[in-house]
Each structure stands twice: as structure tokens, then as C-alpha cells.
Image (tube, rainbow, N blue to C red; front, side, top):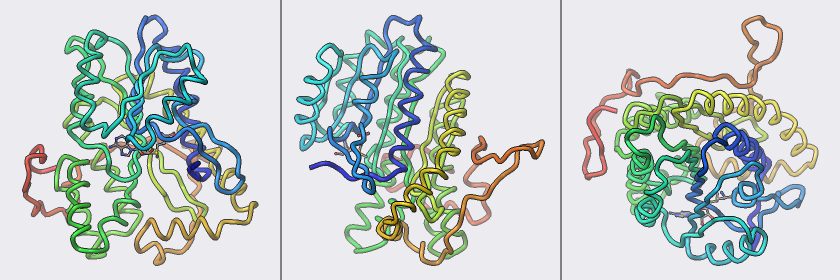
Length: 348
Ligand SMILES: C[S@@+](CC[C@H](N)C(=O)[O-])C[C@H]1O[C@@H](n2cnc3c(N)ncnc32)[C@H](O)[C@@H]1O
């Protein structure tokens, strides 16, 4: 069955569709360029309001020009075979593999196979729904390249504090398992400092979202050594973020291109929101938003605040912001000690 998507998915995938040829143009002197899609999805996807078909990441990436020379699509068994059949038919010449199973378990063997190409420019898309990817997988990816290489694989990662917040509430046994899952994603239990601050209403929902996105940016930079990270929130029709796309790169040029694409995506977004409203089915979307973000009902609907550029001439809908040290917040109390091995250090 086709998966139903909203305009924010199109906006996200448009960024990918624009970035891939830019990445491959920038690295065209390299004879090999690798693409890893850790959550490759299903072949068919439709836009919820308009009913139009949306190409998912595998189709967009395989039809990019210039594109990557090799591709690996990871997907759970329920979708993997169908995806492979469809892609083989549509892209008979392309060099790709579909790897069945949990990407956190299959990544090791795939990276070992690719080891002879560990000098090649590499881009990794991690389009998760909540916290399916594990920190250990991000660590392995960051170590894939030859130590003499100046750059690590670029990571493009969906982070959805809204989905995390939804899973944290609810039934006790499920909640505990979900908290462990979130800790495996962050590689630390310290995100609970943020959760506690939210539960005690010390921080607002937007602050919770900012802090949860910041924590992964901080860790990508300070623990994995990425030079640049950027975030862009993708908003629902009520102005609240459904998720953020986080980019991590060691390339100045890659970061500059992605910043431009984030700016363009932020400029597209109001038009997409208007279109969704025009289709007059926003009520259903808002229900989806309420389901996915606890305490959203406390908030009035907001529009993204217009920000002027330094000359005050033009509205700036997105700007690059630095990450901060999570423990610099006065509510951070570091009470959360690592009960499992996957905590990778003290403090944040
Ligand atoms: C948001 S969808 C990805 C959509 C896809 N990137 C696209 O553009 O069409 C997330 C996908 O991840 C898959 N998935 C979830 N957990 C996974 C895991 N641990 N390993 C591999 N795939 C996983 C799900 O089956 C689902 O198809």
C-alpha cells in the first residue's frame, strides 16, 4: 500500500533532490561516490491532500544527474524485496544493492564490503520516523573513511522531538522500552535532562524541540568531530515543527550548498502551507500534529516569525545557528547516570 505523505515530506525530499547533483558536481573528479540510504522506504508514496505521487529518496537519487556511482538502500524485510524489484525494473543500469533488515545490524557488513572504497566521497541519508537509528551506527559511519581522508561521510538525519515526546508519554512498559530506544539513538541517557525540564514545565514545547535537536548536533560535533552541522525545522500548517533535518559535514562547500538549500526550502514552505490550507483539509493534518506532539494544545497557532537580514531589506526565513553546550542550561542537573554501555561519556 502507498504511504501517505504531507507537503513537508515533499519539501524535505526536494532538498535531497537538489543536494545530490550539487554533491556529485562538487566531487565529480572522484571516480567513485557513495550513497547510503539507511531507511529507504517503499516504492509508492502519495501526497495526502492532493493525491499526487511523490518519488521517495531511492528514485530521486537514482535519477540524479550527475549522480552517485554506487548506492546501498537499507530497508526492513517487509518493504525491501518490493523496493528492489521496482528499482531494478526502473533503473536497470544503476549500481545499487537493497539490504534487508535492521540497518543497525547490517551496517557493519556493508561498510566492510565498501572498505576498498573508503576514500570515496560518501553521503548518508537517515530518514527515520522517531529513533530507529542507533548512535553506534552513526559512530561506525563517521569512522568509515580512511583515517588519512580529510572528511567523514556526510550525514543527513531526520530528528523528530515531536515523535520522541509522543513515545515517552503513555503506558509504563512501552515508555521504558521507548526511552531506551531514544538513549540508543543519542548514545546517552542525558536527553532525560531535557525531558525532565519539559515534564516539569520549565521549558516550552518549542524549547524542548530546540534542545533535543541541539543535543544531537552537539554530539555530532563534539563526539564525532563534524566541522559543520545545520538544522532546518519542517513546519505543519499551524507553524509548529513536525521534525528537523540535521546535516553534518566536514566540507565547507557542502555546508554552504546545504545552507543555501535550507534557505530555499524555508522560502518554499509558506507557499506549501498556503496550498495545504487551500486544499481545505488542514483539520486532518492538525489532528496528526496534535497526535504527534504532546502538549501542543497548550500553544496557540503561530506563524514562523519573519526575521530581517542585517540590512533589514529582506525577510529571512532561515538562518544558520550554532549549537550550544547542552549542560550550559541551568536546569541541566546531570542526574542521569549511564545505566547501559551505550552511554558514551559523562556530561553531555
Ligand atoms: C520515513 S520512511 C523512509 C522514506 C524514504 N526515505 C523515502 O524517501 O521514500 C522510514 C523507513 O524506514 C524503515 N525502517 C525503520 N526502521 C528501520 C531500520 N532499523 N532499518 C532499516 N529500515 C528501517 C521503515 O520501514 C520505513 O520504510
